[in-house]
Length: 312
Length: 323
Ligand SMILES: Nc1ncnc2c1ncn2[C@@H]1O[C@H](COP(=O)(O)OP(=O)(O)OP(=O)(O)O)[C@@H](O)[C@H]1O
Ligand SMILES: [Mg+2]
Image 1 (cartoon, rainbow over the protein chains, first blue to last red):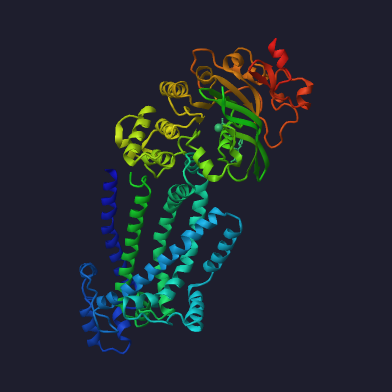
Image 2 (image 1 turned 90 degrees about the vertical axis):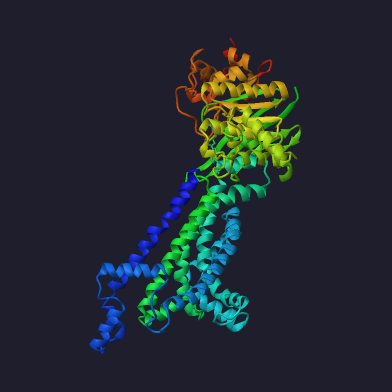
């Protein structure tokens, strides 16, 4: 089973990836302008306070020792205490992360639900009116900034029509879904536009493939030809794009969460940056990078499942 | 002999960015039960396009006219569902390109059985058995593991044979085979041609066999149709046409044929430039390369007409060639 070997290899690859992410986050923190202690304490701190914090943060040890300590702690989910909120960093992250993950999941689901059928319809009607209309609408989606779309949706559906809440996150799961729908939709639109364009092109390319003609020559029903032979093959290219885009989606979540006052990672990140809450920033950077590389991992697995040529 | 499949005055024009391409221009032929028709002509002469036009597999921008009759039924006017049952069920097709005609991400077994699902009511177990039987028939042994393999695990020759197995899956009455043995070595080519000939002789299948190889025509076919620049030059019984070609192009082809015993698979080559399909010749398309050309050849288009019993030719020099 060569593919099993490939699978295990791909899984093991995650170890050096995480290690590198950890080192990069550590190094970045040291590269920040000014030293962390004076940045945290401001200009008027006494020497005693500075020394105490320096020791507390372990900054008086060698860089190697600091790195090792950081990585060991990080592996255990220990990022110290937040400087501005005085609670363990991990508790803040653990509260915010599910919110953002839900938001990204909703956005991805909506984007795919919008993009897949429309891309298919557009490709099957290439250069006729349904295709032209679909592409025109998505062109607008692709060229408008996220916050602008967010504000419009907010004004129309939350403000004028009152169908959705203006912001927040709610208490129960159903309330969460209700609160995250508009921000999820906002986040999904540019993503849907990218997926739509990509998949439309992929479907058009696959439609001219010999094996599609051969499938028709066999006398397969049109739906079988389209789903089994066209859509599946076209999706292989698109899956990679979707996986790569999850990173961008996390970035877009920062803006969307701010517009809709959603208490997720994006909001936490912005607040922490303004508060110069370095431990939180560090932890979030690390967590987001790990999430993105996990998304890539999942992408590769889906790819392998769709395409038997991968990993042989 | 009853004609199962009758093509009359088939014309295919592709509207491309660079103008119209007249790929097939007024082609007529028929094939009956238990008969093998060889379709021969140099590259670009419209053999593949003609075959694809029969079951309407050409892209939308192809304009097709003429008649295709399946047992008297007008194929070009069939409903989508009727056409679906015709394809694969009554008319099987082997494509020219073995490397690209199989779906790279589906197992071979599924690509065979989906044909059975479309045309038979066999259950899963029977379909699997039939798939194995088909692979065995085309000489791919080694059993069930083959069914779960993917095209990239097959050699070019095995893919071509798998494609033949797929085309034969639902026992079609007609097989349109577009150079079905190009990727095969000589022994396997013989084996496949014998298999097809056997199906024709024993089950009464009709076969249209496209090839570049006049040796294959001589060995396997009953009748031959020679194409040049999208037009039909000559048709007739193989023995008669080979003994006494009545079209200057056929004569040139036979002259260029490698001698008996040399199994040279060279493409048909005769001197001169390939014809242009964007601006069809006013007279005979072969005139610029023809050794027997005369003034009328560049001004009047020769029509296909009987020149001997069961032999027709579209050549102004047909009478001279008979001498
Ligand atoms: N989809 C298409 N669009 C435009 N032109 C096409 C298309 N398919 C075929 N043609 C043109 O039609 C002509 C006939 O092509 P066809 O494939 O039938 O040749 P052929 O006789 O099968 O040649 P070969 O022996 O090389 O397979 C060629 O000039 C080709 O360029
Ligand atoms: Mg061809």
